[in-house]
Length: 226
Image (tube, rainbow, N blue to C red; front, side, top):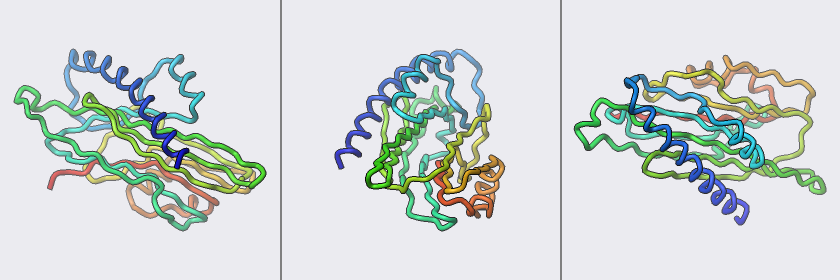
């Protein structure tokens, strides 16, 4: 319990720092012609900020933009598969999007940032490790976060992959996989980003991913107004 509380506190501290980044970017966005395409893309941060974040763990920040007239909820969840069998979601939460109240804001997209943090502590005597996962959503109104901890066995091979495309268009009620953790006792790990795209489109985990000992997927979706 103390570990999770500590991770949550850390997340709020990081969210505060990124809120300053978010606020400083907002002025730049308002000065250019708006692009009305809803999308997600990796956020651009300075090398100094990256060095600071590397002390915390594996951290990724994404820029989101969405139409508040179409979207009422952002859903964030982390899926967990053991040898192809789906387990209970590690993280599963939603954040509401309020429509513009100011008529002058009508037709403008809503901007948020999505933060993921992975940190790992190895417990060699007990032959296990603790994988902490934190997620936060940040906008001009503030931030919200959630965290979870997984107790996992020691493995010989692991690979973390994040979405690296410049910008990915988002569609209502269509899941998007932003990152993955793949683990196996074998020496070789092969993951293809097209496999995650296939999963997003079909809802069926490809056989190539089912063959791994463990697969953890970081996913999001814009839920549309009915």
